Image (cartoon, helix red, strand yellow):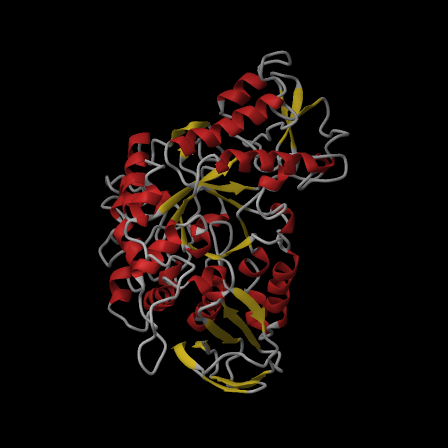
Length: 545
């Protein structure tokens, strides 16, 4: 199943791949159209992930196939054609393994078993086959820092101090440890990072909920077992992993993130993944403003890391109407990252508020934030429902983050096409108005915006691997950049304020001529730069070569 993926799509690929001349431009203008063969070639190559659009799926909230109110793998499979139509090339599945669900699946009780709420391993295999047949990849969440307290490893470890897995977790006689300064801090979700276990008569360390004890990576057996988990799912056709809080595996007396021993483990994990051509790793950095440490030399650690400096904080510069913080965070990754590193670009996820909420209900702000996400250098990850401006809910089953994890809205029926039963979590606000069926009929909808912008990316290597140069604009309110490769060049500009703005892009040789391909505004090129005009809350992409 895994080995045949590239062959399946190379048969239909553009003969020129990424190296030959692109199709000729239409007379009198640039060839702004869909190039399906070129897209297939880019997505079949070893750098496929640089050109792909990923879609984060919470299986539980995406599509219920059996009426029990819980989304499942069969339901997700039934919606693959929708995702393909939207412009999605790869799926990131939030945890789908067996769990007692204290942390929405991030408390894994069995690394080798699919959560029965979502289906069977055969259902997963069917999903993988169906996705691969459509030219889509699938990566899984891999939670390696901790397990569930219900995991058999922890059950054995806590039984006594001499069993075979006694050192698989981080134990201490006191609620602290001289080799674990991180353990003197409070747990992320509780008052203490140490929990007393009466049976063993010791405390165990947990960075997160008490139901999530941290694994002890000083034990070679833990290293071997967790690498074996990765091999298990790669053998079954998964195309890689999103690695949850991967920088926290080791602790020392003074440091809590990306210790040398953690870096060594990541290199071992990358070596395993490299045994499966085309498989990739994306990191969730614990340091939100700089993911440089996760890339190593650019080829020996992660393929991608989430750019949280923009993705989790874009609401502030948009609220202030200031481009400087956005410029600064992209400048940092462009300057610091080694050759080969790739940003993973988001404007939301299962851990933060919905983009609609961050934008404070302003659709133009949401669109402009997505505009940057989908055209800057990096690989975009769209959180499910973002393309509908899915509204947050108020219901909580696990914790406050459930407000951003409400079921997908497919239509205006009582179960909104998600379920024929009672949904496990109440639908979000305005569910009768902002659902897919309604937005498909509206050419000005958020869904239409995403469809059109993703269409612009398709088949154009410049968006995945082209250079990105931040442009001086002579104003504090416009974020603008130049994307270029050997064949194409674009200028992207976003106005962060509600007022019309005129800016001067002071860079010679921006391109041959300016042609707006999406958005609103004008760009007039001259020998020393360009004059840019954007309407209030406006943005545009201009083809300049």
